[in-house]
Image 1: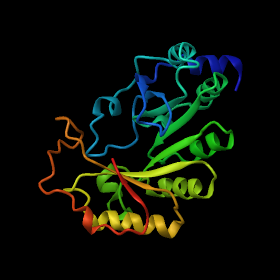
Image 2: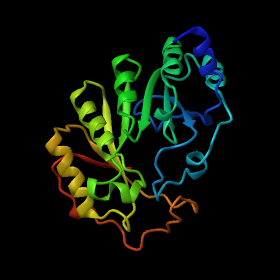
Image 3: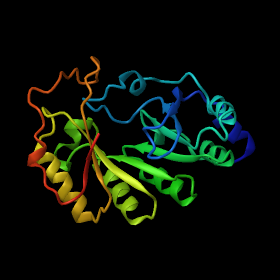
Length: 233
């Protein structure tokens, strides 16, 4: 990438918001969260609808890098989240973050396989949290996208790579039941997934893309298989 193109890329206002400090989003690391505008999915349970539908952001890459320069020695890592971060030009940004000495965690739905693959090949990622939205039969229904195959490629790639990563699923019991989660567990096991599988229950903030309410029935954890280690958040 030419210097002019890189500078233009870094000046783009594509970042919706910044969380300046968290100790929860990147295991064992003090971090900040960069929230990217826009997403290529429309998950019914998503409560970040303002971010998902945003056409642009409040901050440029340069704004965030200026902030990070003030946090050298105070924070350990940067979490790239959204929205969907991989719909944006991440490579120049990640290179600058790495030059400042920070680790990078990527939160992703995995549907931009080539971007994830390139970021890993360039050693620009230290950890990935991959959203396993739904089993294949319900993937389009839940995400309102038709990109299961791309997600599947990313999952296989991360399993084969040496990069630390986690698979995680958000559950709303009116959308995904224990049988659906067991199908995900079966799939992860068949693919050779060895890490913990993280399950987080739907958070009713009063606003979400599908206008969902609190589930009518509580999710029954006792019905889940124990073939892999499950961690609830």
